[in-house]
Image (cartoon, rainbow, N blue to C red; front, side, top):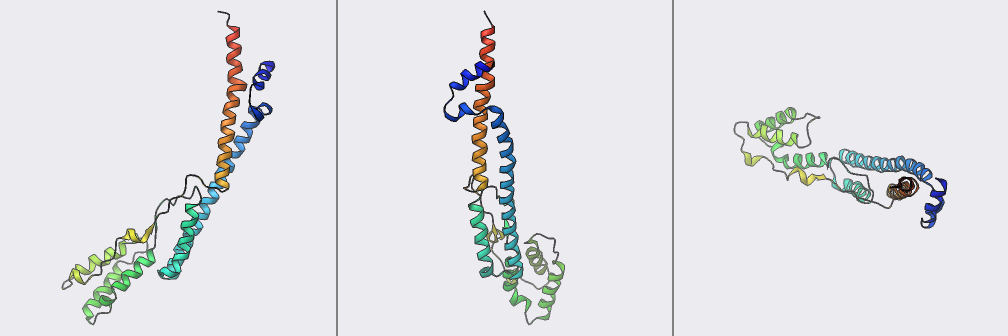
Length: 214
């Protein structure tokens, strides 16, 4: 059996003659969790950058000039690193709410005490912090126009919430530790497959063929 393997190894090109299946398989087992760890690091960095955008959106009360640098940094990182899928779009909640409040300023500051009281009632009724980002706006709009004497034309109409959401797409492969570790896994996997065939499967097939006299 050993002689057969030696003869088979002599037919292998280059470095494959000096390595065996066991060594390559162990290296493959080590490289897979290494690649997974690199992917997790990429993903965690993306999460940190995403949370930074959300924090700036909150602290600046939706000031786009303050948000934009962090948003660009998030986009640049995701588009250059694999394993950074966002899962769900990032919505600039405070910017959306700020624009709505600005659009509603004339109504909220109306000389009519009735309109001011309606706005204040809508604000209290729709202040659920656990609601989706645009639920507050929709709730307030619906509540206000449901009140007597309020025309729908008096209610501010914002652009669709999709214009305030961002969902960047990561590449399938990137030239970072995650990407290079993936290449190593592929190379080791391919090498292990070749060695599995040439060191184990092929010699056994030849031996069984020679053992069968027919």
